[in-house]
Image 1 (cartoon, rainbow, N blue to C red):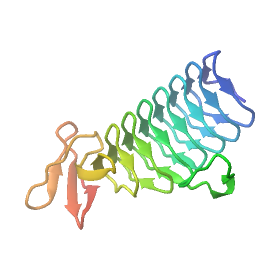
Image 2 (cartoon, rainbow, N blue to C red):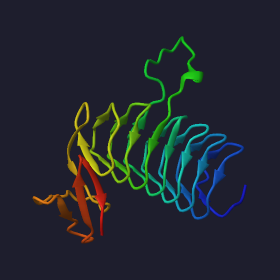
Image 3 (cartoon, helix red, strand yellow):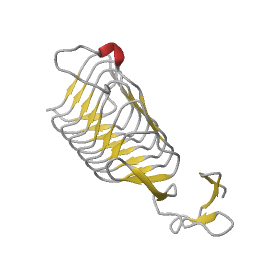
Length: 192
């Protein structure tokens, strides 16, 4: 294991873990075997990263987050404080279902708010925004803003996380970046 990342002395890193350069792992976290963490990530306090989890580059994981086997986060994902993933739909203490772990994919640039819960087997789209406390039970499209329990879409957001307001032609401009977006067939894509 290369030592071009920071790990606080109270954290544990198991064998066979890949950690990218300039990643920081803070107090009381546990990185389990066969997981991969990209470059420039920030792993907060009291985080558990289970075996075979994959985090891309520049992923920000806030305090008290549990990332279980089956989760893949692409580059630039934000995971808010105390949010949690699941990997079994019908867990039972007395029934071992490790062979039934379901995959969850969080695509590039998506943000998941504090205390949100992501039920396994779903994909969170690129630049989607899951509000604090939301319970995600189904696929979330690219750029969608979802809130509530169960999570329901209430709008669309830019790559910078701002609510998009579309004109009659289906065009919206991000108020921070001035990027232009097109809403067409209930999908949003950046056009400029």
